[in-house]
Length: 552
Ligand code: C2E
Ligand code: MG
Ligand code: MG
Figure 1 (spheres, rainbow, N blue to C red):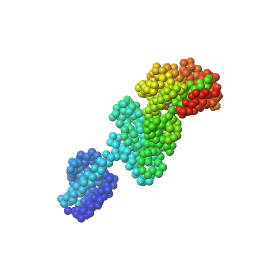
Figure 2 (cartoon, protein in one colour):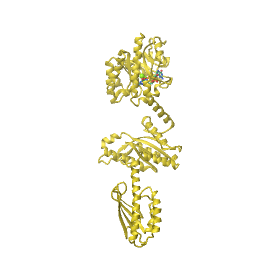
Figure 3 (cartoon, protein in one colour):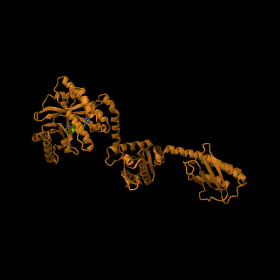
Figure 4 (tube, rainbow, N blue to C red):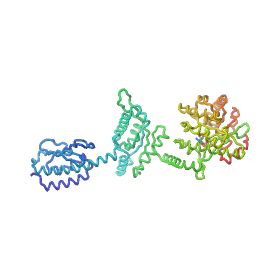
């Protein structure tokens, strides 16, 4: 017997204490932990072979990886209750005396102790993988992202970091083109190559094609460029590299962050902005963005209740025949009467247009207008044709015409008292749908009008081919004292004569001055709408105004 049992017991005690704090089986500090007891036992190297556990490498050197694996050795197989099996081989250091049977007994006890510790560490690492790892992408998951941020905050380094939330653009197309399995590989290459570019931090998967990243601020441009578009090899013969792009919301930390939620909130806000308002699909968080998102959330959350409570009102803006000064129609414009204040459509319609909520509002408005008209009819008042705006969001609805007619008929309003204003669109898809709704309205005796004609890319084909009743020319054609007034007047004159030549009623909106009214008379455009006559008026004021005449 060469090993002293007392030394062995002390060394084993110390070993147990150190192992209790060891985070993993193959930790770089292993050598320091194993050395004292290995010196007592005369061990120079320990190899381990895991037989049935796939979470760790199958074979590894847990102590003395530079020592030779030859000379006297002891091998021992250990099996746990769950069947997990490991074989340990301990090599005697050349300077230690030969082991006898008593020594081997102590070594065997030591191996059992090591096996117990390894069992615990392996379970911990499996739990770690299940909790913090995305096995498909082979990167951390959202919990791992949060943990990394918390660590950086704890170390007081957060001011040096930035974070990002990104979503791969049109990845379903990649999946369809190359198959799901190849799609997954492409995605993996894209995120792994990004992770490889970062000095510190990492890339994490939230789920699907959504990811987050934390990075040192000096890597900001690198990550931004990678996400703006990176060519990824498809590894399918004859297929060119595919350019993968992402929508990305960034936040550059200030140092005031005290928990991971504060970072997550900012990048979640920034990605929404990247998708909705940013031209290059990349947005860096700022305070204004926060307010916009807050506002949006507020609108979205209050909208349904507001419809239920009938908080939306129809304001009526007169349409005037400038030859006579008489009101010949009106446009119904939506106002949200919220806590006694009148909220203009610009602060809620663009938000509602991002979902189907706008359709609900439009139907509500049409119904509101029909109720008002049928009220006016039954009270024996003078009634004019009222136009109602329909958002483009309706164009995918193949029941749209039925629904519109249904609402009008339910209130018993004659079709010739309703006009529907649609903003023209020029894309092919919209064209077909627009055609069917315009045709349908026309055939039912409901006027269809092109709203805001002249904004964006107006298509003359669209005007020529669909049976529109009214062309509403946008105010941008009206001379307003700016440099290109002359061109505007020329264009206005031609647009008006074209519309009239095509048999369309022609009205110009946004008329604000007497000079503009005079110009309209000059070019034979006799219908106008604008602040020169009236702003959109609450129903009661409009009712009073309707019988009066504007002096022009
Ligand atoms: P729009 O349909 O082109 O309506 C005309 C807008 O021009 C109205 O703004 C009106 O108040 C404004 N306007 C009228 N005369 C003048 C003028 O002389 N000068 C200037 N600068 N502006 C004038 P409003 O009421 O703020 O509505 C803005 C837009 O919101 C509307 O543009 C329409 O696109 C949308 N909108 C309003 N109500 C509804 C609705 O019920 N449904 C849908 N889908 N959109 C609506
Ligand atoms: Mg309109
Ligand atoms: Mg308009």
